[in-house]
Image 1 (cartoon, rainbow, N blue to C red):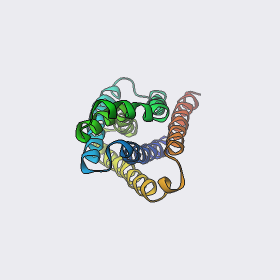
Image 2 (image 1 turned 90 degrees about the vertical axis):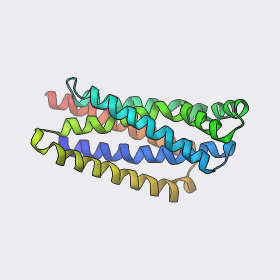
Image 3 (image 1 turned 180 degrees about the vertical axis):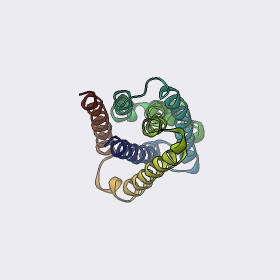
Image 4 (image 1 turned 60 degrees about the vertical axis):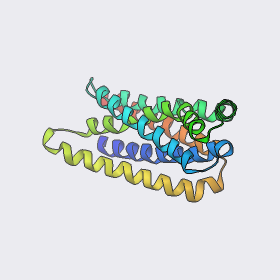
Length: 198
């Protein structure tokens, strides 16, 4: 049961990360366009934030790992989306007025909006691996399969967001759904912790 739960939540995390990343292009576009500068800025911020998240998540996973702490990663990731949902227009307007260059303007905007939530989301993957590994003998296979599931989630998140979600829903509506997914995932992981304690 634990393995199924972790794989499901890792899938949701991968799906959500790519959803937020693709929406980043839509959020920055009214101010700096949709050029390669903008997408380069978004990808740079996401890669940097994820790399830091991987390190932090890996370190955290060595300190008495459990599903309650795991659930808190999802909850904090969801809460970190609040500034993006509520203040993205105000933040981007301020950045646009301060920095005219689309390269550094888009990079600054992406840092302000996405760095913290993406760092927190990045912590989920290594923590997932730690919860699944039962012995060092199968650690490589376990990590590989989890990243397979997470990356499939990312691929589906990319195609669904770019092909359908942005056509059907407002940006903030999609972000609220991502927020709800993180809250639900956090609740499931935390609930499992207390269930397993019984």
